[in-house]
Length: 165
Image (cartoon, rainbow, N blue to C red):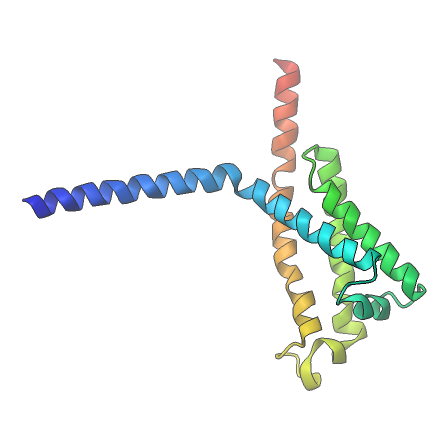
């Protein structure tokens, strides 16, 4: 009998813990995702501006139509704009920021077409180089941008409701 009572108590505790964690993730997950991506863009953009980015050579080689210093300043500034924009929740700011993010990410995929030797080991498209991994991880940023973008209308709807009530 005692075993059944303990099992029920433990089961109830697990259920309560699960519900609590899910509520926390639901309440804070998208905000933390937005802030984490913002930090990443602010950090990486800053490194490009001070010419301390490990990806500097790759940027210069893929943004070949600009002089090296200008390419780093341009991409670094662009990334800082994305990072700063993600700190705001205003729908227009977020929409503009996400547009800049997706353009920037599309640019990072150039490495696969312009410099496949820099993206893949020995011309084999399965084992990426470190630079290739750097570009492939942007799939996570695309997914994060989609999740963040899913909140834009929600935020706009909340603002509209506040104005009409």
